[in-house]
Amino acid sequence: LVLEGRLRNAVKTGQLHCYYQPQLEVATGRIIGAELLLRWRDPELGFVSPEIFIPLAESSGLIHALGIQVLQQACVQGKAWLDEGLPAISLAVNVSAHQFSRGELGQQVRTLLAETGFPAKFLELEVTESALMQDEDKVIETMQQLRATGVRLAIDDFGTGYSSLAYLQRLPLDILKVDRRFICNMTTNPDNQQITKAIIELGHTLRFEVLAEGVETAEQLAMLQQMSCNYYQGYYFSKPVPAETFRQLLAQQQ
Ligand code: G
Ligand code: G
Ligand code: MN
Ligand code: NA
Image 1: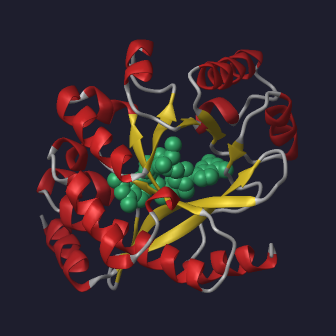
Image 2: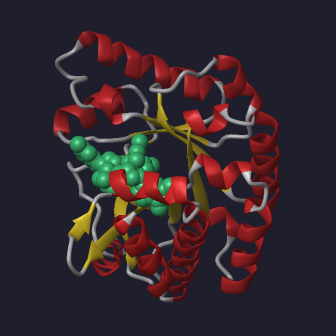
């Protein structure tokens, strides 16, 4: 309850900041985007992990205000970098199930894009499998609204939820993100290697692009290249970094 109060205050006073983890094209090594990951440093408690405060935000309803702030930071920052003449990239925002099933997200995102002038095609929303399992009709409706606006949709942590393959075909998705637990030991564990390969092939069959998460070594990257994986992110290239650090990485690429 104490933590909830502090989180409420942090949301109100804008103490939450987005870090950016670069996403790269496997074939060329070019930065093609970034995933935004929230960081909260409380003056007394220090850094509080999103593994703690995101569930708290969800159970307390704060996730809606917090979620809008992240989307706004993405649009404002993305527009500023475009205006600076930096290479055009996409920005991926994590969206929780609660935001999707409320039914207002489509309109909220449309408004934010209009207010900031950030082109919809550069905004990507990440949703987990478990989110998709809840209130499916509502979620699909919201996804279709977002898609109609031009926003891209990614399924996060793929392979870890209780999902049927039927919904993969039914949902308006653009990107499949292979969960990092398959990637982390793929060079030593033949099962995980085959699972990763199968997920990439499945994604391509359904006309999605595929991104591997949690790439930490050159060996993993080489294997993913052989498997024709489109994109990757992970500590091998960079952990999530502050906006200014990411801007420098992007500027070096010009
Ligand atoms: O870097 P990492 O510890 O940041 O992230 C931990 C978890 O918190 C991940 O599952 C990530 O998806 C989640 N997370 C980070 N930022 C956000 C956010 O802005 N919104 C939501 N819903 N989840 C987030
Ligand atoms: O659940 P989601 O995929 O949204 O969150 C990504 C999480 O993975 C964040 O906590 C982020 O900090 C973490 N992460 C990103 N790259 C790596 C990596 O290469 N190795 C590990 N172990 N974690 C990573
Ligand atoms: Mn994610
Ligand atoms: Na993930």
